[in-house]
Length: 88
Image (tube, rainbow, N blue to C red):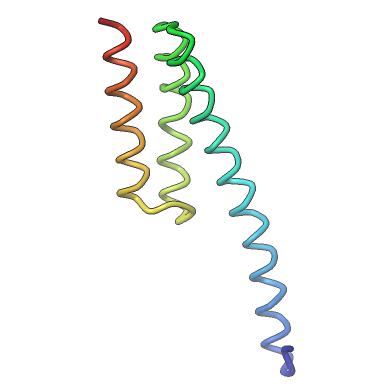
């Protein structure tokens, strides 16, 4: 348990930051899920538009430090290749 005033404040800050990061991570997962559902349905146009919506969300999450930059890049790359394969 935090004893000093600064430690108590740090605990409050961490709790706030955790809540914000949780919301951001959840939002990104939702966007990724939409792309994967579009790929599963076989709708190339819907998958492409879903990917275009998901890409900036992933980049923003990486910029905020919610996910690692390489992780975001890898996810975007793999989704893009799956969408591209669907269009063929």
